[in-house]
Image (cartoon, rainbow, N blue to C red; front, side):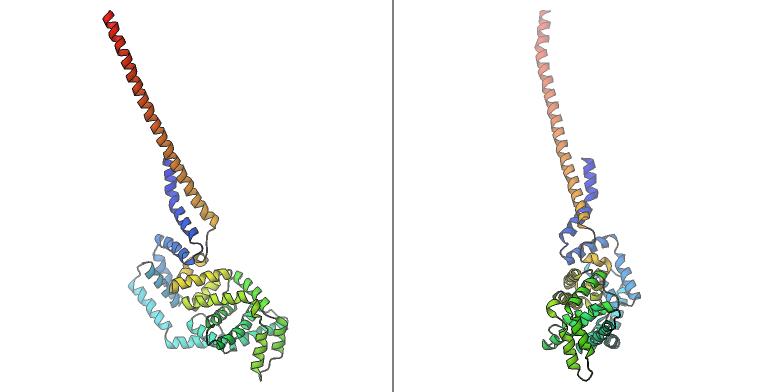
Amino acid sequence: MTVSGAALTVLWPHARDAFAILAAQDDPAELSDIQLNSALRNSQIVVADQIEAALAAGDAGLANSFVDLAREKDVSLPGELAQRVSDAVTEENSSSHFARRFATGLVTGNADDVGSLSGTVAGDLFVFGDIRDVVRESKHLVMGEDTDRLVLGLATAGLAVTAATYVSVGGVAPLRAGLTLVKDARKVGRLGEGLTEWAGRSAREAVDTPMLQNAVASASVMHPGQTVSAIRAAFHAEKAGALVRLAKDVGRVSEKAGARGALDTLRIAEGPEDVARAARLAEAKGGQTRAILKMLGRGALLLAAGAFDLSLWVFGALLTLFGFLASIKATTERATQSWLDRKKARRLRKQMAALSSPAMTTAGATG
């Protein structure tokens, strides 16, 4: 019983955490909370260290995300550190900084914050960015050079979505932003390998390559509207449902956690399911999302350890609990049996004493 009890004491904390993680495996917000609570129990200074690292890297948004996380988890931070984060966020949100980043995004088509994303989306909304990418990749395709078919497919899809954006007066703007972010993440190498492979297959299926080549070959500067219509016709929306859903989920992450939060998600995601989970996490955690992804990585979205390993902890604890209860049962039975045996022996001794007492009296009288 002592051995079983000691083993259960050792196993129980691991089994409790494992059971909680298994129960929360379909809820990324709850799953991340459990893992964060466990990590912060061991050391709360990790939050301050992460803030210092983010400030050193010039990422005020990530530093502020850790401040939000510290506030949520009741982690105390030095007042000086919180003030530095506030100053960095103020500078990043200043008009001059936003204007510079907007221009960078508009010209280069690369987005990593709100300003550059706004510029990139603006370029894509005016079809400048998407046409630039379609023409560049299509020429590579025609000339037999290495072609990024994913960027080509996303840019072609973007032209179709841009038209819908104008018609709906911005109603599909999150989808437009999501497509832009996926395309930009691919161009700067921040798209996870598994997600790149999946999205590449989806993009190839959604684009009619011969039709696109003809559209680019017959493109005319004098008739840009006809050129855009011809390129857009090469995109088959009915075959791009999964790609569109991915872009919508990326747009949802961007709305709640910012452009960099969406890019962080795309870097760690291995498939569209990961991005959908990240969207649910962002909707639940908002500004804390980037800090959570930084600390937990892909483990914030799904089980980092195998379900089998976690189940072993639970099974081990149940087994030791069974052993402990069985030992209590056996101990109780043996103690009860021993007490009954002693009681019977005591009664027998009394009976023997009672029987022998008259015999001794009779023997004395006869003598």
